[in-house]
Structure formats: C-alpha cells, structure tokens
Image 1 (cartoon, rainbow, N blue to C red):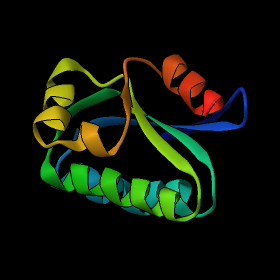
Image 2 (cartoon, rainbow, N blue to C red; image 1 turned 90 degrees about the vertical axis):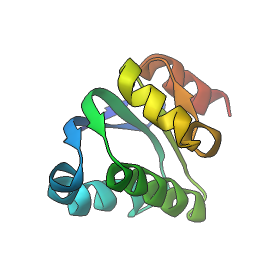
Image 3 (tube, rainbow, N blue to C red; image 1 turned 180 degrees about the vertical axis):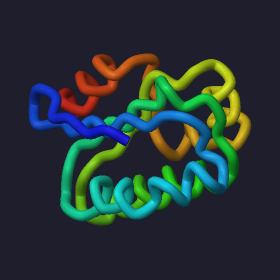
Length: 112
C-alpha cells in the first residue's frame, strides 16, 4: 500500500496484489487508518489489484462508509477488468463511485 497527495489535496491510496483474506488482513489496519482517520477526499487506486474477494469488498465498503460518516469522500479508480466485473456483479459500483483512471476520479472529487 502506498499513499500520495494529488492536486487539490486529494489523497491517493494505491493497493496492489490480491485482496483475498491474506491480502486484506495484511493491509486492514494501515488502510483503515489512512482511509477513515479524518475527513478527506480519497481515491483508492486499484490498478495493481489482481483479485478481489468478498473480504476485500468489505474493506472498501467499510472505508467508504467511515469516510462518508466524517463528511469526506472515497472513490475507486483504475480497476482491472476482472476486478471491475467483481465490483459490478456485487453492486459495489452502485455504492462507491468507480472511475476508469485516477485522474478522472480526482477531477470528479474536485468538481463535487
């Protein structure tokens, strides 16, 4: 997991690998700390995520709800086709906005 600040004070959290039980447990605490500790505008970059299981989905939903509860925003970006299909089939794209790339996600947050 890597973090960066994008223009407009948007936080980017880049995830990688498999978000299965092992992968999700490995990043749970640091990801949750970055994603929910304070009100922020966050883009979760999924470009390097190769697999998304239900526990990974739960991690993303929990972070989005936590950020919303603080008055912030969390969106997803750059998911590979297989990961994007999982998000769509689980209906996550109806709960958390999903953008094709990080820049369009950042621009959408800035315009809101």
